Length: 115
Length: 110
Image (tube, rainbow over all chains, first blue to last red):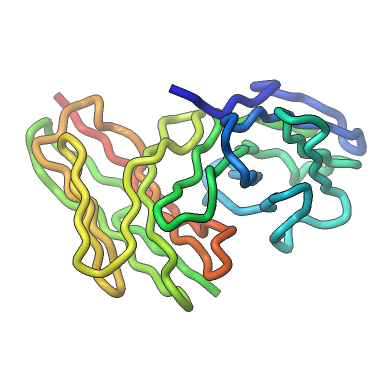
């Protein structure tokens, strides 16, 4: 069964450093998302991406964040200058199209630890 | 702003003891209500989508129902392997963003 994959599974970085989190969505999916979950808190929406453009973003997704689909398979989230409060699990998700019952499928997540 | 509240926060059951989890929501226009299962350190795993009041979906020991203000996830005769956090989420009007509740952590003891 096709699934969303994410690398790395765990990333440790120093405050102020740039990180890139990578995702490979399900191959015939057209909509891509990033969510994050701080330990013990709710899953929070960051950004949605379609047709090489951001379609919606949350207040969390400020100028320090960017997304890119550099080729036909990868979808990346870049944090330019990490802060301690960026420590969280980051989940990528994908969705086939905008039909009524098209659920978002989530990857296993990348645990980001900012020291 | 869409809001989702789940209760209880945690639920301990004996194997075979049926129960229900609640998800209350307020949205400007419901595009879909989703149930996910999340195991520790893993991503949410899709279970069900519900769209309209009165709709029901079933999968093994799980049944999800929907009213205009809330959804229930009924667990019949649970087993220890059903232990997980169950998340409820609603899709916003633009169809882009899921708003999640805080989840119900279910523990089923043998």
